[in-house]
Length: 281
Image (cartoon, one colour):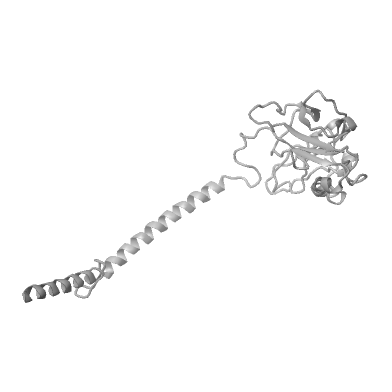
């Protein structure tokens, strides 16, 4: 019986020694089964291996970046034609013309958007020749000049003579712009036209005249090269009457008169935009 007890004690001691030796063996100087020189070689191998991988990655990124142009995206074929956007930036415009707090957010958005079209900003740009593309040198280090588009061109929708943009009288203004595409030169004479989608004719005024978009604002050379460029705008003033109030009107605006597409069923914002407006009285 005594021998059995002694054997158990010895076995426990041997197990404890074996377990400790698996971490550090004082007889051989091994730590976790390897000597210091073995660990050093392994660490050196992985250090060199991962340094090589990092170097290869950095070299690949550098070569790829060398092929990119700071001013022009490498691939533009997926967006050959511009979309049409509106301001205020909402596809559902609902307000009561008798409650200033209801239409104030729309007025504030329009005023904020037009700040870059103020005369103080546009005086920095060039007075260009109408009806002609404003072509410039393609030198990468040359900053491109931009043609002036003053907010005064929008007349009754400029926010200068009427700071409420017609919202207080129930004849609101909507601003439309083409999205920027580098190098775009539309053929023809593009203009924007709008119509109520149902058989409910609504009179509209366009600024500039006939909703035209002059060629002198094309081409666009990119945000970095064309820092002071602003998109040409078309303002549509909806001349709503009492019969039009308290009705939800769906209005579609399109770019016409050029080769810019406006009938792609896969992209309902390509060259066109539809928004809803309801003026309560």
